[in-house]
Length: 286
Image: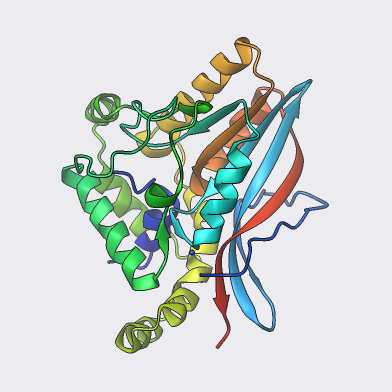
């Protein structure tokens, strides 16, 4: 797998179809420019991969962009499940997940996706095992009444790809050959971590690349289905909720979607007002 595909696999899609200390929150005094939605922090004892909860306000309406990585520490998903309860409307991503939410959970033995989406699901499962992490699909509770699907259906996804002559595979190749960020993992380091079968060593090799995931994917926006059309669908659902009188909305999406989504929110008159951070991975510095 090309190194540049790693942030794509772990930061873009929900794996539908991490043993750490309690996650902490750090209040951000000033929003950086451009806004970070995923980052890496280090101390003498550990390295952390963190995702942001970024608030935008317009009048009495608040919209929180809740960034996700789709394999992480168990406590990360426990914390997210608790946070989701505070939103009258929690919009979530999942291609083909229109039958979830409003009391419906992910089936334990549901039908597996085929084609490129099926390959992506398999890649997630293998990465999850190698890194000794938990899957979002397994630990996030999608059944509460406030969960609202805000993504493409399978039919919409395939139709848009056909109309635009795009595919998941072509998007992955484009991302793989994008300009390197300078934070790619060491090939030798990856090999040694795999030989040692040490999940923490492997995480330390990958964490900086993942921490650049939103910045890398920000350069991939435009007239594409993977980012553009899915974001448009999500924000259309958000607008419907606002028209119905909902004043506090959460959007739970992969962090790579948020540079484009933030731009669109600002164009709608929203302003960033707050940002907090959650620990997705906590890696001891052995």
